[in-house]
Structures are given as C-alpha cells and as structure tokens.
Length: 432
Image 1: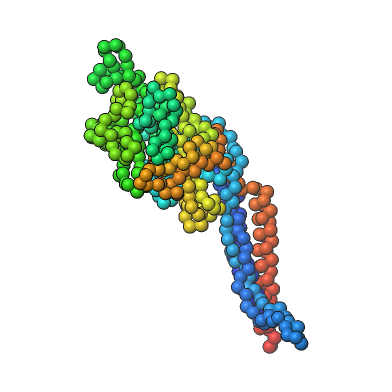
Image 2: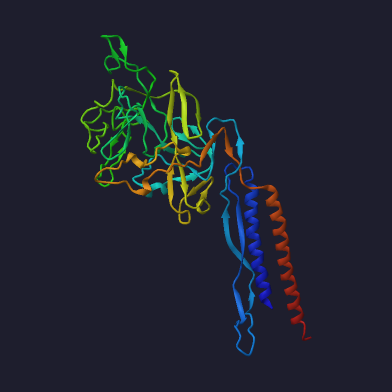
C-alpha cells in the first residue's frame, strides 16, 4: 500500500521541478536572447507481478502485469528556435536570423585548427559596443571574435585582372589593396597613422606629395606563423611596423628582419616589402577615431573616420553546430559546444566568404591540403539584423497554462498521499 505514497512523492518532486522550469521561463520573459526550457515527464521504474506470454496451441496468451512507481524527470530541453526582433535603436545591437551564434571569449585565445573552436563561448545576444581600448565587446565585456581586413600582399594597382590563379589552382585577389584575413581574432579598431613627415617616409619634399594622411587607418600585414609543411598557415598577428607592438601601451619596436612581411607562394618569407606599393604608414599609437559605427547584414562592423573614409573594423564570425538544441548552457546568455552539440563550424553570415576558404589563410598546395573541418562555413542561410536584439522565446500565455496544469498535477499527487495515509490509519486501528 505504501507504494502509492512513494509514487505520489515521486510525482510531487517531478512537478516541483517542472514548476522550477516554468518559473525560470517566466522570470526571463523579457531577457534578450533567452531560450525557453521545456521539461518532459517520464515514467519511473516498474515492478512486474506477472510476466506476459504468447500463448500455446491450446491456451491463450496474456499481457504482463506491471505497477509503476510514479514519474521522474525525462529531460529538460532548450528551445533554440529564433526569437522575434526587438528594436532598440542602437546601431551595434544585432540579432541572428537563423540558427547561428556569435563567438566571444577572452583576448588571448588562438585557433590552430577547428578543434580549438570549443574554446569560444556562443551567444545569441548581439549587444555589442566598443570599449576604451578599441575592442568590440558584448554587454559582459567578452571580446567579439571575427575576421579582420589586412593589407593584400598580392596587390597590384596596375593589374587588369581581379584575380590570378596560382600553380595549385587557388584564386588570389590582386586588385584590392585590402583583403579579408581568415585568422579568427578579437575584433579591434585599427590604429591611426601618424602625421606624414620626411623622416617616416610619408612626405616627399621633391614633389610635395604625401603617402598618407594623419589619422588614416593602418591595417596589419599578413605574415607566416609556424609554417608547417602539413598545415601552411598565414597569420595577421604582425603589425606594419613591428612584431612586438604593444597595443595597450602604444610602445613601438623596430620590425625584426623577415617578420611581418608578405609570404611567398612556396611558403617562405619574402625578404622585402616590395609587394606593397608606396610607403607604409607609421603608427601614431592612437586608435582611429570613428563615428557612426554600425554592423550590416553580413556582420561587417564599420565606421567613418575623421578623414571621411569608411573603415572596416572586421566581420563578426558566426558559429554553427550540428545540433543547436544540444549546446550546454554555461550561465547568462552563453553556451558551449560540448558533448551533445555535434561538430562546430565557423564562417560569416550571408555567404561573404569565397567557396573553398580555410581557417588561417590556408591554401591548397602540392604538398598539403587543409583539413576539411578547417573549411569555413558560407552560412548562406543566416543573416544579421541590426538595430535590435532577439527577444525571449518564453511565451507568457503558454507558461501560465503550463503552470496551472502543473499546479493541479501537484495537488492530485498530494491527494494520493493523504488518501494513503487515511488507509494506513484505518489499518492500524483495525485491532482495538
């Protein structure tokens, strides 16, 4: 007889857990990017009093007789479907239309291959801003990761063609002075160029010309980093002026020989900066002053400098996992691609990247082929919408209806406890 009481107690506990889930959903009904949770009830263990049988040629069969012991929590799932757009009027606020995630983390993360993507935190809340050091951060001061614009080492201002094809069949952009590096890095406002002088190569007194204007953005160069025959990578960690530049203090060092210079097609470092035309701007030690900073549908974060030039800070990267509902909530608006989420890929929204683009500017060579998981995602089915945030997916009407059903379920289980108690009382009072 006490089995009914234990079954009811199990039901009470399970309904209370469900009420906790409902309460959390209601508490976050106005939390940007919140994904509503759902608890699934599951039957508890059964005891078999009579086994089933298939019957014989003479006698019929019978079904098994089993008694359950209440309910238990089956699963608590996240509803990762996109929420509605909630306008805020803030230019850098944005939401993802699709099943992708923004990638955030500390400043010191590095990514040698796709296996390192799990270092990052995933978020659907695009409450971005620019901090005092020029980094693009979210509301909790985690830096936003993405891909930066860098100087094009193959730039040819006299080229008639937009691309050339190397011996391995790679298309190489030679027309644009700036290209998108595919090294995943924290996004940061570029440093500003110093005033051009004869001493820094910015002014030519012979013909009274200037190579650059003070305050122009100074983009990084591509340079080799740990060149491995099995994984040829090109990074943009090196600044135009030095490899040991400290962006936080503004300290400048001389450029070591062979560092920060263009990389030849055979994977070796070129000896000079001859691939670049004109003088390289000298840094002022200050960030470019930008106005009207905003983010577009492809994730490009741009602003207008004091010189009137449009400056591309970089493109906010977007991550995708095989099973979005399987990500692990790690607190606040953040998730991790852990067990249950499947494989994680990274790319840009709207198909900005060219097909066959790999992490860390890897190219297919005669000796090596980049790993398939290092192939960056086109993310053509995702788009970024600016000027607002994603609203919570918790629906008040649904949660209140679930709360009423849960309350009645809890109430019914309490009745089982009281009825069982009354029956036990009668049993005890039989002998008087």
